[in-house]
Image 1 (tube, one colour):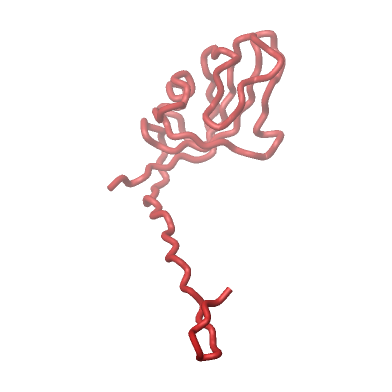
Image 2 (cartoon, rainbow, N blue to C red):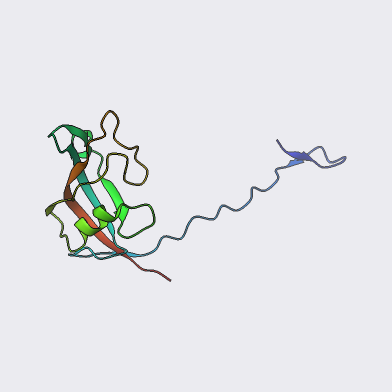
Length: 128
């Protein structure tokens, strides 16, 4: 809706506030994961009884975490430090109520789980 100018018969459109796009940190592909890196991977979560409870490969939706970031399970970070693209790693046992950031804990189980992780990509971000 425009703003009317008194007596002019024309309208002026109020300017929209400038949108500031987030400044992306430059990223560099690296060959080995270190604390602070963004690691993209597929995972399969399995209970100690062998029941699969989550599978990002089947959904075709890889997952990305920053190693060592608040909310990232320690067992996940420890399992991925030193990993290389294409490598498969396994976590130690994790409680069923522990979930990766942004994901719900496993439903319908209280059994501890292990995660099989297939590393797809590792990025180091430049920090100002």
